[in-house]
Structure formats: C-alpha cells, structure tokens
Length: 328
Ligand code: MEV
Image 1 (cartoon, rainbow, N blue to C red):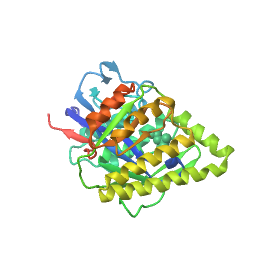
Image 2 (tube, rainbow, N blue to C red):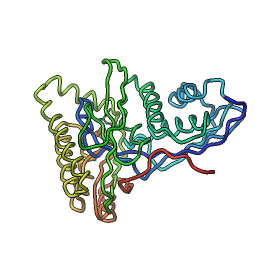
Image 3 (cartoon, protein in one colour):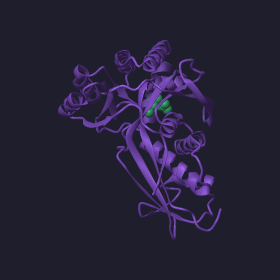
C-alpha cells in the first residue's frame, strides 16, 4: 500500500442472543440481534502504531494486530487507533466482537475505499476472535455485529430465514461449520431492555459445564433439542411480527436454560423483576452472570423494575444497523 494512509472512523454494534445460546454449540439454531449500543474506532496516520495512547502489541491486542497484519501487512504506515462506545465489556453483549468488526472494516477501508463487504469483514473478525480464543469462537457475535438486524446461525440452511453464507473454522475438536442467515422481521414498537448483573462469568467455563452435564447424562441432549425447537418457533414468530409469541418463546427458552444449570441467582432476580411488565424475558449469552434481556412494550416500567432489583439497564430497539463507515 502507499506511504500515507487515509483517516477512517468506523462503528459496529453489540449483540444480544434472543434464542439458542448453548444449544448452538451442539448445532441447534440461535437468533441474535444487533443492539443500539455501538463501539466506534477511529484510525489516523501517526508516527507509530498505538491504541488509546498505548503501543499496539500482539500480546495485549491479539485481535487488532492479527487483523492489521492480515489486511495491511506488518509494514503498513502506522496509525493511531481510538476506541469509544457504550457497550459494557465482559457482560456478554459482544463488545470484543464489535471491536474486531470495526477494526477489520477500518483496515479494509484503509487498504481500498469502496462499499463495505460485510461478509469479508465478518470472516476476518471471526478469525481474529477464534485466534484469540484457542479456535473456539462461534461466528454469532461477529456476524451479528457486521450484518446488523437479526441474524440466525444453524448447522443447516433454515427455510424461514434468508441464507447469507457458510462459515467454517478448524477447531481443536475438528472442523466446524455454520450457516449464517439474515431475518427481516416487520418493525414494531417493541424494545429490548437489558439488565446487567455486573457479574463476569467466563463463557468457556459455562460451555465446559454444559459439556460435562451432557457427558454425565447423555439423555439431557433432549434439553438441547428442546431449546432448538423453541428457537425455531421464536424465529418463525419474529418473521410474522408476532411479538407476543416471540416473548413466550423467550420465556420458555429461559426455563430450559435454567434447567440446564447456566442461570444464576442474580440473573433469576432480574428475570423475575422484569417479567410482569414484559412480553418475554430470559438470560442472554453464556449465563452464570452477565445479562438478561426483556422484550417489552413499556421500556420505562421494565427498566425501573430491573434497577430496583439491582441490575444496570440498557435499552435498545430491535432493528439496528451493522458495521458502518462514518463521514468525517
Ligand atoms: C455465548 O455468548 C454463547 C454460547 O452459546 C457460546 C457460543 O455460542 O460459542 C454460550
């Protein structure tokens, strides 16, 4: 590439899982939505590579350096990166994936300006996330952040959604493959209210706990299949714009996740508090801590109920943009 790189500002949304967490690890469908909360990365030519004023190093920023080296090459003219946004980190809302997506888009735009190729961005960001997580990241967070809207992941092409692309990844347990779809539900005045317990539980530990349960009790695979059936019902309800049925499916999904052992007393307290004012309510993500999500027509009442029960609240609409290059 040339000697001077242009400046670029990119943003990408966080995500929350409406249906299918944990079961997606065993091939069942999962549905995630892009949030209003976003992360913005600005990149400007500079004397040396830095991020928020500190030197950019592979040890501290493996995702970003991997993306830079893949897209621009290690010899590229240096840039100063600045990151800001309102996605809380370590809470299961996809802040790390949003950073990888925004960085991938920014580096691609630096290499050659033109329309954004969201499939290429999602691919690069997924490889960066997987590289930093011992090859075990699913493409749910990165594809949802890149594509925006509602994204469905499955091990098969789902009839009820628009197929976008296949993602494959060599993992320590062998090659894995996902079919990625977009869903365009009719718009309605429903809101997501996210309640953050403020407790951080490692996704890998939660996923390992489910694997242990299934190894000890193979018959519990029926619970995983039940989550898959609820997720399919939920995605069909979303397609029809039947948000009452979406809410019922969310609540049913929560009961199954609780039975699987991945909820926590703090999540249960927030779920109980939000339920009376919501169409549906569930934990979202790996569980053990992190966030719950309520689908509601009354975001003020639901937010107040969650806050009174000790949760930190974020409110989001349902249909939000994916990765976006900003005019400066
Ligand atoms: C974590 O956000 C979602 C899980 O299903 C793990 C995964 O899909 O890789 C628990």
